[in-house]
Structure formats: C-alpha cells, structure tokens
Length: 152
Ligand SMILES: [Zn+2]
Image 1 (cartoon, rainbow, N blue to C red):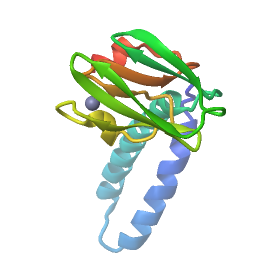
Image 2 (cartoon, rainbow, N blue to C red):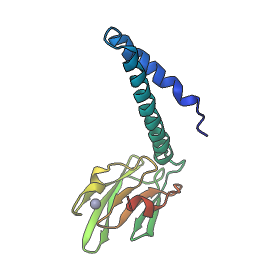
Image 3 (cartoon, helix red, strand yellow):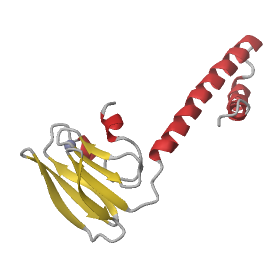
C-alpha cells in the first residue's frame, strides 16, 4: 500500500522552499539534519493523514443511527427528515438532538462535559458521542467499533 518512494517527493519540495529562504546560513551538515527531520515529520504527517482519511470519510449514506446504551433506538434518513428537535433521555439526563438541513447534532445536553454539543454536526465517519449519557449518533454505514472509539 505505502510505497517507499512515494513519501519522498513532498518533503523535498518543502525543504527546497525553506532552504531557499535560509541558504546563506545553512551549511551542509544542517541541511542533512534538516532533511532527516523533514522526511521523518512528513512520514508521521502522512500516516496521520491516511489514518484520518480512513476514519473521517463520510459514508455514502444519509442513514443515521442513534444509540442509547449500545442499543439502536432510532434510525433516521437525513435526506427525508424535516427540521426538528427531539430529546433522548438517559438516567435522568437528556440530550436535545436537532435535525436541520439534512444534518444532525446534539444541540443541548445536561451532561457534565458537554463534549457531545461541542462536537457539532455529524459530518464524518467519527460519531457524535455523549459518554456520560451513553449516547451515540453515527452514520449507519460506518463500520468502526463504538467500543474502540469510547475506549480511547
Ligand atoms: Zn454529552
């Protein structure tokens, strides 16, 4: 998958630009050192990009599942849903979920961290999660394991 030749191209371009700006000050030793740093940084960067692309890719689906305590409590087709809000309750707490313009998010929540609200609209393979309320909103087509995401 990852050829050894492929990642070499971009760091050389970056390096060339940077060295161009500093060429008077930079001697050969520093150049070699810089090159190694840039190639290493680029490889890390590249693997990060590939990882995020795999994770963040939006599934080819408008079908969204809402899970409470690992159980699918409803399945929605966002392409057909009218704009509305509704509440999902859990153990005395609640999340106000909003559907608007074919998108879905947690608009308000009384959980302790409000991470679910801060995550904003569901727009990728990464689910919107409210850990305290054990609530997950995700695209139905996505294949990742919720346990793996929650365990991070
Ligand atoms: Zn929350």
